[in-house]
Length: 217
Image (cartoon, rainbow, N blue to C red; front, side, top):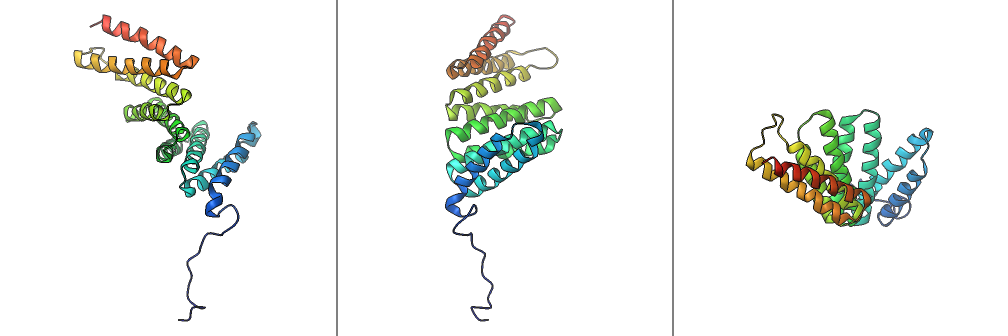
Protein backbone atom coordinates (compact mmCIF):
# COMPACT_ATOMS: atom_id res chain seq x y z
CA UNK A 1 0.00 0.00 0.00
CA UNK A 2 1.32 3.46 -0.87
CA UNK A 3 2.01 6.03 1.78
CA UNK A 4 -0.76 8.14 0.34
CA UNK A 5 -3.31 5.40 0.72
CA UNK A 6 -2.18 4.16 4.12
CA UNK A 7 -4.23 5.05 7.18
CA UNK A 8 -2.75 7.63 9.46
CA UNK A 9 -3.19 7.90 13.20
CA UNK A 10 -5.21 10.97 14.05
CA UNK A 11 -3.05 13.50 15.81
CA UNK A 12 -4.10 16.26 18.16
CA UNK A 13 -4.23 19.64 16.44
CA UNK A 14 -1.34 22.00 17.07
CA UNK A 15 -3.69 24.92 17.70
CA UNK A 16 -7.10 25.39 19.30
CA UNK A 17 -8.71 24.08 22.49
CA UNK A 18 -7.60 20.48 21.89
CA UNK A 19 -3.91 21.27 21.38
CA UNK A 20 -1.81 19.68 24.18
CA UNK A 21 -0.31 22.97 25.35
CA UNK A 22 -3.76 24.56 25.43
CA UNK A 23 -5.64 21.86 27.35
CA UNK A 24 -4.93 23.22 30.82
CA UNK A 25 -5.51 26.86 29.83
CA UNK A 26 -8.80 26.05 28.15
CA UNK A 27 -9.91 23.84 31.02
CA UNK A 28 -9.37 26.81 33.32
CA UNK A 29 -11.28 29.11 30.94
CA UNK A 30 -14.27 26.75 30.75
CA UNK A 31 -14.27 26.40 34.53
CA UNK A 32 -14.21 30.17 35.02
CA UNK A 33 -17.04 30.54 32.51
CA UNK A 34 -19.04 27.94 34.43
CA UNK A 35 -18.66 29.94 37.64
CA UNK A 36 -20.40 32.88 35.96
CA UNK A 37 -23.65 30.95 35.55
CA UNK A 38 -25.23 31.29 39.00
CA UNK A 39 -28.92 31.68 38.20
CA UNK A 40 -31.23 28.68 38.24
CA UNK A 41 -32.10 29.01 34.56
CA UNK A 42 -28.39 28.93 33.71
CA UNK A 43 -27.66 25.56 35.31
CA UNK A 44 -27.42 23.66 32.02
CA UNK A 45 -24.96 26.19 30.61
CA UNK A 46 -22.92 25.94 33.80
CA UNK A 47 -22.89 22.13 33.60
CA UNK A 48 -21.70 22.19 29.99
CA UNK A 49 -18.77 24.42 30.95
CA UNK A 50 -17.83 22.16 33.85
CA UNK A 51 -18.12 19.07 31.65
CA UNK A 52 -15.69 20.62 29.18
CA UNK A 53 -13.36 21.70 31.99
CA UNK A 54 -13.39 18.13 33.29
CA UNK A 55 -12.68 16.70 29.84
CA UNK A 56 -9.81 19.05 29.01
CA UNK A 57 -8.30 19.12 32.50
CA UNK A 58 -8.30 15.32 32.65
CA UNK A 59 -6.69 15.08 29.21
CA UNK A 60 -4.01 17.63 30.06
CA UNK A 61 -2.36 15.33 32.63
CA UNK A 62 -0.72 18.42 34.15
CA UNK A 63 -0.92 18.98 37.93
CA UNK A 64 -3.00 22.17 37.64
CA UNK A 65 -5.11 20.73 34.84
CA UNK A 66 -5.99 17.69 36.94
CA UNK A 67 -6.83 19.98 39.88
CA UNK A 68 -9.22 21.95 37.66
CA UNK A 69 -10.79 18.70 36.47
CA UNK A 70 -11.19 17.56 40.08
CA UNK A 71 -13.00 20.79 40.94
CA UNK A 72 -15.25 20.48 37.88
CA UNK A 73 -16.14 16.87 38.71
CA UNK A 74 -16.98 17.94 42.26
CA UNK A 75 -19.47 20.57 41.09
CA UNK A 76 -20.99 18.18 38.57
CA UNK A 77 -21.41 15.71 41.42
CA UNK A 78 -23.28 18.35 43.42
CA UNK A 79 -25.57 18.98 40.45
CA UNK A 80 -26.27 15.27 39.99
CA UNK A 81 -27.12 14.92 43.68
CA UNK A 82 -29.59 17.83 43.62
CA UNK A 83 -31.33 16.01 40.77
CA UNK A 84 -31.51 12.86 42.94
CA UNK A 85 -29.09 11.05 40.61
CA UNK A 86 -27.17 9.63 43.55
CA UNK A 87 -25.33 6.94 41.61
CA UNK A 88 -24.03 9.51 39.13
CA UNK A 89 -23.14 11.87 41.98
CA UNK A 90 -21.06 9.21 43.71
CA UNK A 91 -19.29 8.39 40.44
CA UNK A 92 -18.39 12.05 39.89
CA UNK A 93 -17.30 12.58 43.50
CA UNK A 94 -15.03 9.54 43.26
CA UNK A 95 -13.57 10.80 40.00
CA UNK A 96 -12.91 14.15 41.67
CA UNK A 97 -11.13 12.36 44.51
CA UNK A 98 -8.96 10.42 42.06
CA UNK A 99 -8.12 13.46 39.93
CA UNK A 100 -7.37 15.64 42.93
CA UNK A 101 -5.09 13.02 44.46
CA UNK A 102 -3.27 12.54 41.14
CA UNK A 103 -2.74 16.28 40.73
CA UNK A 104 -0.41 16.38 43.72
CA UNK A 105 -1.34 20.04 44.30
CA UNK A 106 -2.83 21.78 47.35
CA UNK A 107 -5.86 22.84 45.29
CA UNK A 108 -6.31 19.32 43.94
CA UNK A 109 -6.08 17.78 47.42
CA UNK A 110 -8.65 20.32 48.65
CA UNK A 111 -11.08 19.33 45.88
CA UNK A 112 -10.39 15.67 46.68
CA UNK A 113 -11.08 16.24 50.38
CA UNK A 114 -14.44 17.84 49.62
CA UNK A 115 -15.29 15.10 47.14
CA UNK A 116 -14.47 12.33 49.62
CA UNK A 117 -16.46 14.11 52.34
CA UNK A 118 -19.43 14.25 49.98
CA UNK A 119 -19.04 10.55 49.19
CA UNK A 120 -19.23 9.82 52.91
CA UNK A 121 -22.24 12.08 53.44
CA UNK A 122 -24.07 10.60 50.45
CA UNK A 123 -23.44 7.04 51.61
CA UNK A 124 -24.60 8.02 55.09
CA UNK A 125 -27.83 9.53 53.76
CA UNK A 126 -28.47 6.45 51.62
CA UNK A 127 -27.69 4.04 54.45
CA UNK A 128 -24.94 2.43 52.38
CA UNK A 129 -21.59 0.98 53.42
CA UNK A 130 -18.19 2.50 52.75
CA UNK A 131 -18.56 5.83 54.52
CA UNK A 132 -15.67 5.14 56.92
CA UNK A 133 -13.11 4.85 54.11
CA UNK A 134 -14.63 7.91 52.41
CA UNK A 135 -14.33 10.07 55.52
CA UNK A 136 -10.79 8.75 56.03
CA UNK A 137 -9.92 9.81 52.48
CA UNK A 138 -11.29 13.28 53.25
CA UNK A 139 -9.14 13.48 56.39
CA UNK A 140 -6.02 12.37 54.52
CA UNK A 141 -6.57 14.70 51.56
CA UNK A 142 -7.27 17.63 53.88
CA UNK A 143 -3.99 17.00 55.68
CA UNK A 144 -2.12 16.73 52.38
CA UNK A 145 -3.55 20.02 51.13
CA UNK A 146 -2.66 21.97 54.27
CA UNK A 147 -4.98 24.77 53.12
CA UNK A 148 -7.12 26.19 55.97
CA UNK A 149 -10.36 25.31 54.17
CA UNK A 150 -9.10 21.79 53.46
CA UNK A 151 -8.17 21.24 57.10
CA UNK A 152 -11.66 22.41 58.02
CA UNK A 153 -13.16 19.78 55.68
CA UNK A 154 -10.88 17.16 57.22
CA UNK A 155 -12.06 18.17 60.70
CA UNK A 156 -15.71 17.84 59.63
CA UNK A 157 -14.96 14.43 58.11
CA UNK A 158 -13.32 13.28 61.35
CA UNK A 159 -16.34 14.56 63.29
CA UNK A 160 -18.75 12.64 61.04
CA UNK A 161 -16.59 9.53 61.23
CA UNK A 162 -16.48 9.61 65.04
CA UNK A 163 -20.27 9.89 65.21
CA UNK A 164 -20.69 6.90 62.89
CA UNK A 165 -18.27 4.73 64.86
CA UNK A 166 -20.64 4.52 67.84
CA UNK A 167 -22.33 1.07 67.86
CA UNK A 168 -26.09 0.94 67.41
CA UNK A 169 -26.67 -1.03 70.61
CA UNK A 170 -25.03 1.71 72.73
CA UNK A 171 -22.64 -0.80 74.32
CA UNK A 172 -19.18 0.68 73.82
CA UNK A 173 -16.23 -1.58 74.64
CA UNK A 174 -12.95 -0.13 75.84
CA UNK A 175 -11.39 -0.89 72.45
CA UNK A 176 -14.15 0.93 70.55
CA UNK A 177 -14.05 3.79 73.06
CA UNK A 178 -10.36 4.36 72.40
CA UNK A 179 -10.87 4.19 68.67
CA UNK A 180 -13.66 6.76 68.77
CA UNK A 181 -11.66 8.95 71.15
CA UNK A 182 -8.74 8.97 68.73
CA UNK A 183 -10.98 10.21 65.91
CA UNK A 184 -12.47 12.90 68.18
CA UNK A 185 -8.90 14.01 68.88
CA UNK A 186 -8.26 14.19 65.14
CA UNK A 187 -11.32 16.40 64.71
CA UNK A 188 -10.07 18.68 67.49
CA UNK A 189 -6.56 18.86 66.09
CA UNK A 190 -7.67 19.50 62.50
CA UNK A 191 -10.34 22.00 63.49
CA UNK A 192 -7.87 24.06 65.48
CA UNK A 193 -5.17 23.76 62.82
CA UNK A 194 -7.53 25.10 60.16
CA UNK A 195 -7.70 28.50 61.83
CA UNK A 196 -11.21 29.00 60.42
CA UNK A 197 -14.30 29.93 62.41
CA UNK A 198 -16.15 26.77 61.35
CA UNK A 199 -13.08 24.64 62.05
CA UNK A 200 -12.83 26.07 65.58
CA UNK A 201 -16.52 25.28 66.12
CA UNK A 202 -15.99 21.68 65.01
CA UNK A 203 -13.07 21.40 67.46
CA UNK A 204 -15.17 22.86 70.28
CA UNK A 205 -18.01 20.39 69.72
CA UNK A 206 -15.58 17.49 69.35
CA UNK A 207 -13.99 18.38 72.70
CA UNK A 208 -17.42 18.17 74.33
CA UNK A 209 -18.18 14.77 72.82
CA UNK A 210 -14.71 13.47 73.74
CA UNK A 211 -15.15 14.54 77.36
CA UNK A 212 -18.57 12.89 77.48
CA UNK A 213 -17.17 9.67 75.98
CA UNK A 214 -14.25 9.48 78.44
CA UNK A 215 -16.54 10.18 81.41
CA UNK A 216 -18.73 7.23 80.43
CA UNK A 217 -15.82 4.73 80.50
